[in-house]
Image 1 (tube, rainbow, N blue to C red):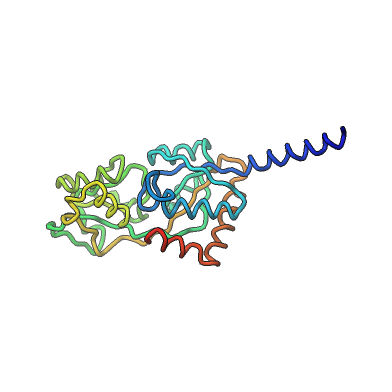
Image 2 (image 1 turned 90 degrees about the vertical axis):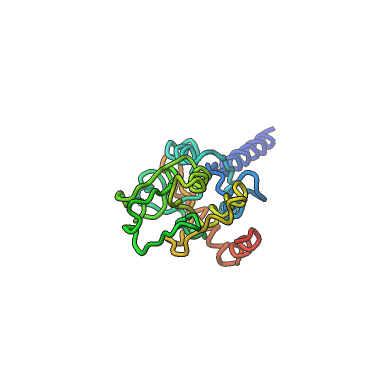
Length: 243
């Protein structure tokens, strides 16, 4: 009997350990990087799951609107969130992972509008669409002299741009082009991404400071990501998903 009790105890311990190896992250529909309705939830979802798997954790995702995605992590209701751009202000409530590839962020405009700039100061007087809670670039986000109009999501901005209620929309190039193609195909020939963009952005996973073993969770992801860089997996994923 004693032998069987020992075996049962070992089994129960194993189950407990396995259950503890899950990590829950909040995220958003931000196609073509990630989304509920695209293949395998997109390139970023595949990369994040695989990096955590190699680090010994099973990642589960919760999709929501961006403000709630961040809020859930801030309050510790989930382990973390992604994809995020780097910002010093986020360090107040989360730890950053090592970076993985993102894309260029810049401005979209109507093709018939004669708009150009060398410095952000050149855009004074123009109405620029942003999204509430989004990090863009440090210089742009701190440019209080610009006329910024914040809304709930990128699509709302592009609809306002098409209706000439905005002069510019700040957005990731691939996200913007995907939104236009999917939701506004009749406007595809009228809207363009400006050749001079703000920055080529990396993406990050952010782990909440309020969850247990936050450092270990970041280290697990980073270890897996390092392996994926070394063996070419990241490049293969990028190619497979059209980046």
